Image 1 (cartoon, helix red, strand yellow):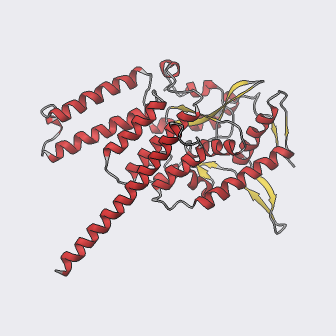
Image 2: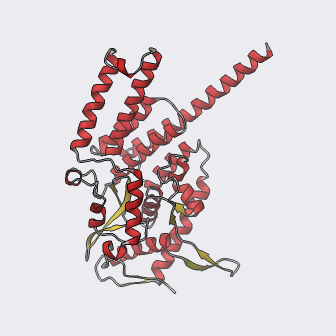
Image 3: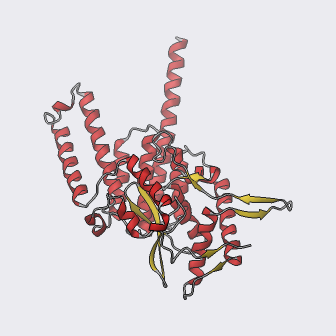
Length: 357
């Protein structure tokens, strides 16, 4: 009898815990949706907070997060006040802020603390271990980047955009296969790319050199486009869905709901489409399993046949948009090429920032 009671309480606690986790994610979805619908001010930092707090099950230390962001913001302000920028244009103040953010993220900066002790602010580097978060989804988080100064092409541009927002300027996220970077536009140089993985400003030819950016993907706004503020929030919605799955929560309809909402505001967001098709594939698996059937029976059931036809249609759309899947090992080689051949791919007109003394 005691064993039965113990099992009952274990199951009850697990159910309550699952409901708490689901509630966190539902609340996060609501906040992001309200930003998109104009019911709440769009704030990229708060959107990232919301997503990461849901993944961390409500345990994100937002006070510490804000303190770390404020430190970097104030450091950027100090650099901006002391540094010299070889740039002449009516937008020099804005471009100087971009340069100061870049310096905060990529330079070693000597500082004096309140005890009059010298220490060095170390640059944020690219972590080539588990760059897609397959082993640990924490590796995708800005909060992890702030603690370790090691990040990837997800957390680094997100942090850059957050700091730009804190300084009152706009930073556009942009996509390429498996990758996120920053696009800016200046009066003197037009549109240019800021790459946080290697710390240079690559020309578009480097992006094209991967061989996985089809012209149709550029024309259709899949890749190499400066994203709007709402499109950036759409990225956060897909992050929310992926973190939900990594937390082993199993409401597939929630994942699909996140992807659908993201595509309302970023219709050609391929990652949202892929997340949705994969979720529908999981629905097929679950249905067949509950009916003691394998995939050879997929067309025998109206439910699974309908889902399969939807997936096939959606994959066709993804292909027609110009998306081509880039193998992960090739992606890492492509990233490395930028560092090894930076003289070939660097936009030398942009890299003119002079460090402060």
